[in-house]
Length: 305
Image 1: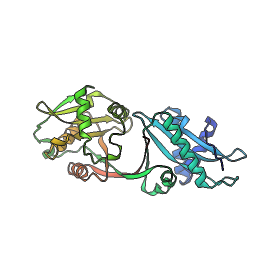
Image 2 (image 1 turned 30 degrees about the vertical axis):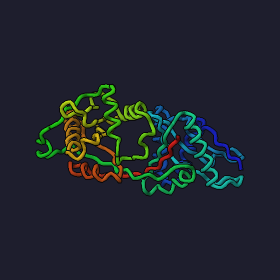
Image 3 (image 1 turned 45 degrees about the vertical axis):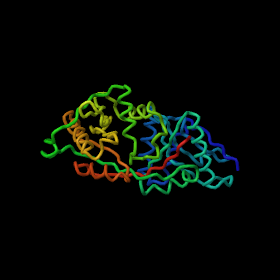
Image 4 (image 1 turned 135 degrees about the vertical axis):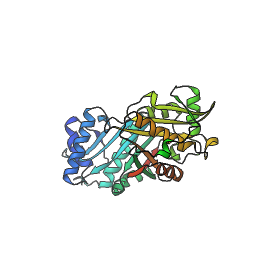
């Protein structure tokens, strides 16, 4: 059966989001719908990426949201569907929506698409797994309240921090930190360095004074990227990386402590981060300096090559 998704019109937005979030209890569904509508109206979600399918009589019977983000990436929320009176199965409607969204994203130059679901939402990913997505890992979200012990504050610094200059040395060092990474290695090399930097710059409130090239003497050993989140008074530790020949020497811990001190000195209320559950060394480091896990998401990924 030929199912042809279409772009949602403004009058379709509310009903489409109610379909997407139809699995939720009423109050939570309405809250999610209201938040999604605000994001659309503020331009933080692309309304062109809200797709739906209709029954022969014109009622919405399925919807899906995807949105490109800077750095040749995109986010996708799985489809929500109801039974179609023409006889199309829910799986057929879901597959049509996912395939249409992926084709639309490819046309816009997207190279990788992510879906992040809470563990209790994993059932929503069945249509993604049928259409080229893979289950990659779990992300742990962690938070530090910036109460630092005297021992942490008194660690002698061996490193120098040079604020961001978009030059060859910074780019080369950033690329080197990805070698042998245990944080989502599946995406390593999918995007070029310009696209990677563009993606990082778009997170939170970009301030070049909160990005650093880290050196020991004249030798670059890593990079530190932090950003202020627009709501909640927290900073995000967006990325910390150490080049291969400088690992296992305590530099990662020193860089993370520097990040915490910078955030506290600037008046941040907390520092948050996300870490691949497979990255045990990073997990151990973050826990050792006081980060506490507070949430997790399962990562589904499609790479367009």
